[in-house]
Image (tube, rainbow, N blue to C red; front, top):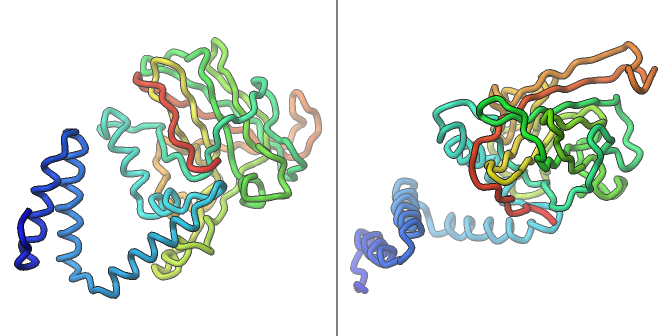
Length: 297
């Protein structure tokens, strides 16, 4: 260990210590982190007061993360990091389009098992009825049978059920199993766009940057089966605002699905007023079927 004589000696001393890390991938990450972090401090000439504010912000974000809210995941999306990581690691390592997307901060484990074609409405949720069909294919275009699929989305008031005590537990959430056709069908209400929470650190940052807090309407999908890389998807409906200015930078062309409005009676449910259909095809890549770390409980 070197006795530090000046600021120019700090980074080489830290890098020398990082180089002792046994795990090669951890060593690579830590060496790069130190280089970029120290470079950022030098480039911005970070002041002592700003450094103290930065550590306080991180402390506050930790305190704002609870069983129902993950501030760090929300911040990662708001800085475009979540989408960047996703696009670099999918679609042939960023070479092609992908139907993978960011997980978001509201996925929960143990969605209730729901019959294919069933409803994910578990409490009174006003809004036009949605009939959705998601088709899951392998890279050769063949349907995937026996795929376990979580579906979830926000309510018409723009809140997920864990944010809203008026909604039943797991409202607008369900777990499905694909049949031989590789399709999951479900009934819900039309999804709407909504603002991310603005009373936390992310909200303060958005205001300081003169940014709006809104996300376009979307449905979340998480699908997994042995032999396939777990698919994490957000399907954005084409009939929504903020597609080109999503606060989480999540929208790509491959993720936009067509929302169709119907006024004739529904073939199965009769005259229910205007209703909507949404069909989307999603492709899974071969790989390990591992579940992500749940951002909330």
